[in-house]
Image 1 (spheres, one colour):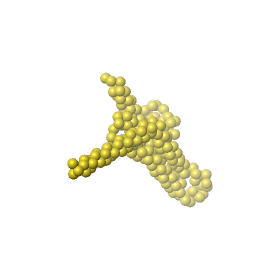
Image 2 (image 1 turned 90 degrees about the vertical axis):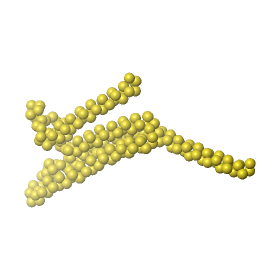
Image 3 (image 1 turned 180 degrees about the horizontal axis):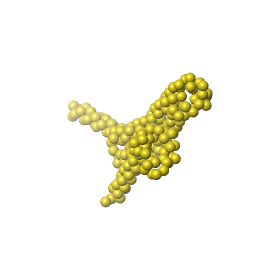
Length: 213
């Protein structure tokens, strides 16, 4: 088996294993957060600190972030393969567009969960106006934290930073090759147009020379 085929096979196996591991972790996270599985019963101890931190700061936005990130990395790998194979411009542009879509969706999840978190926090804090007024400002802030304002702020940060990092990763890993590919295809199209024009000119010259003969 050629070395290139070995590398593609190992890369596919590693990508599949990583995707399966992340998928399993996300499934465990969602089921545990939905009380379908009790982590304490599985491990004989309290849920780990990272689980509590993720649950308090990202909530159900975390699985969406991970899914989009995995799809982005797979799309980026396929885009690189198509560029190195010198595929047609439409096939390269398709993967390029898909990578941009995943980046936009990563931003979008952060924005949407920000709105959801703020709404839930306000509803929880102002659900009982009389009790809120009597309790004071600190109690209001505490009720907003309990209602999900941390999720709103954290998803804003993760969505923004993650989206910009995805753009940087794409530029660093495939940006130069992608630009050269588009430039090469543009030159090929321009050369094809010039060849067609030259053929038309030769044909017209032949037509004008025939009556004289």
